[in-house]
Image (cartoon, rainbow, N blue to C red):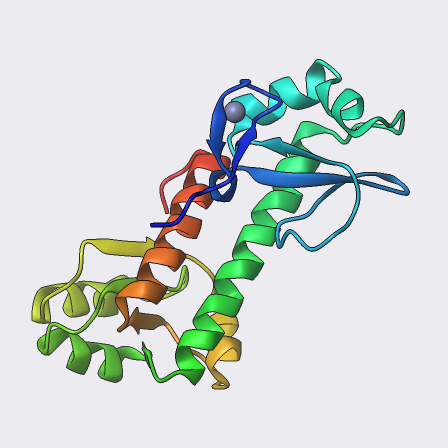
Length: 193
Ligand SMILES: [Zn+2]
């Protein structure tokens, strides 16, 4: 493990690995969430958690940290924007996994991979039938990492097919990254996925 740069959360004032906090930069119309860490300019960091975001926004910590007087976004708007960025990251990771041949897509491919114990993480579409879900979970060797996210239509788009109700990540590296994004989303939305 190399040295991980550290950043202070402007909400809780805790010091964290850079990868565990979200970068916010000053844009022309207000603070901009720079989830991919590509935007230039003065940056502030905040834990991707409602209580930290609340503190960062309510105490005017963010404008101070960014040296800007522009309006601070509403907390729900900020959280929605961040949640979309997390979903977008997961979407691109799943697309990459599919291109790398590391994603089983659709019930029969997933079932086959589950039988072989090859699935590192399962992603169920929100609109997958309970019957299919149950059948997959009882038939093979389901991994501990499971999440319910996206629609069948969205999952289909990621893998270039029409409707995909379930996908299984076959690679540990991809699954660890997707899982940490999924955990981040859970914490952010404060709900079980
Ligand atoms: Zn924090």
